[in-house]
Amino acid sequence: MNIAYPNVSVTMLVVDLARLLRRRFEAALADVETGLTAGEARTLFYVWRHPGQRQAALADIMFVEPMTLVGYLDSLEGSGLIKRCPDPKDKRAKLVELTPESNPLLERIGAALQSVRAKALEDIPEDDRAVLERLLQDMKDNLISEEGIGKRK
View (cartoon, rainbow, N blue to C red):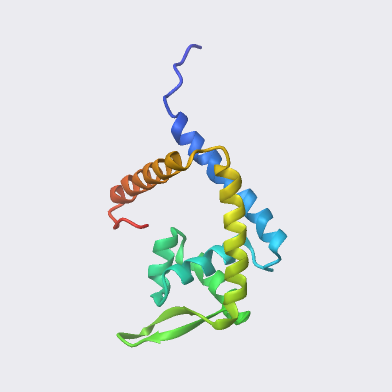
């Protein structure tokens, strides 16, 4: 059968790249000995990047199901790395904040992310890196806008 291949090379490239980056991130986390899973480390990173968010908003920002996030938050709270505080605007909601105990782990997570980034970009000129990041962000924004949610950085 002679079916023409669809022109999806960028799509498959990004999917494959995401899988490779995740695999490298998991390995880098093990190297810096955080004791966290990739999901827990990602959650801690997003709590640092978006402090004081409600759990539901954090799940939306991370593009994970709320119940998935609850598992990560339970583990991080049990380890003393985050705390959930009542939202002064809605006592039923909880705001997620870091504890001081998270600082050393955030440094290690940052080191793991930096090592993966450095390897992925090692032969790409600095000017091209900025263009690449902008184009990937544009692609993400296009997909987000289609889902009817705001742009996220």
